[in-house]
Image 1 (cartoon, rainbow, N blue to C red):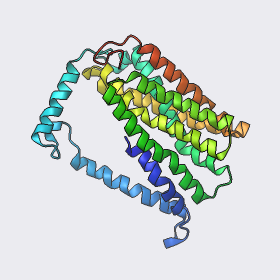
Image 2 (cartoon, rainbow, N blue to C red):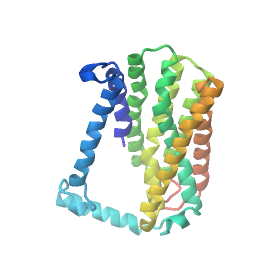
Image 3 (tube, rainbow, N blue to C red):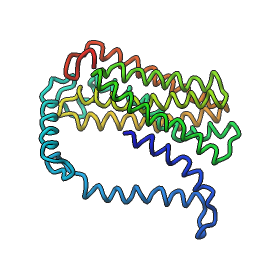
Image 4 (cartoon, rainbow, N blue to C red):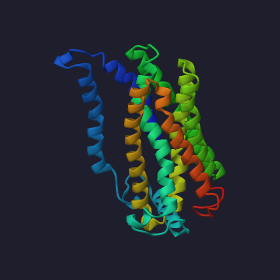
Length: 285
C-alpha cells in the first residue's frame, strides 16, 4: 500500500515536468504525460496474468517453508470467531459492523481521492508555477510513505488496531481544518501533510481490523463491498468539493465535508468496536 503515496511522490514532479514537453514528435505535454504514465500500467497489467497466482502453494516466488507458513496462518485466521459471519452481500448490507466499516473507510478514501485531484490546484493558488506546484505537492506524499510504515509497524508491535485506525481519521480532520483556519502556504502544506499521513497510515490497521471481523465465507464480498462503497463516496466528494469551491471561492470551506466525514468515521469506529471480542477481536483490536 506504500506504493499508493509513493506513486504520487514520484509522479507529481514527473507530471509537472512532462507538462512542459510541448511539440516533441508533434504531441503536447499533456499527451506525453498520458502516454508515458499509462505505459507502465498496461505492461504491469499484462505481467499480472503470468506472475500472480490464486493460492500461496502456486506462488513460484515463495519457498516451501514460506508457503507452509502462509497456508497455516490463513487457516488459523479462518478458524477464528468473527463479528461478521458467513453471509451474502445482501445480508452484509444490513449488518451494522459492515456498514460502519464502509463509513470508516469512506473517510480516509474520500480524503485521499479528493486531495489527489484538488491538492495541486490548492497549492498553485498561492502563486506557484506548475513545476513548483509539482515539487511541493510531492512533499505530503513523501512524508506519508514513511509515516504509514512506522504507524503500521507500531500497530503490529502493540497488536492494537482500534485506535491505530481511529487516530489517523482524526488527523485527516485536523489537517484539513488547518487549511481553513490558517490559510497560508506553510500551514496549508503542514495541514495537507497531516491529512495525507492520516489517510494512508489508516490503511494497514483498518484492513487488518476488517479482515479480522469478517468470516472467510464473506471476506471477499465484504472487503470488496467496503472498498466499492468508499470509492463511490470518494468520487462523490471530489464533485462536492469542486461545487463548494465554485460557489464560495474557498478551498478551506470546500474541504469541510471531508472533515465531517473523517470525524464521523472515527467516532463510529470507536463506538462499534468498543465491545469487540478477541480474534477480530479484542478490545485492543
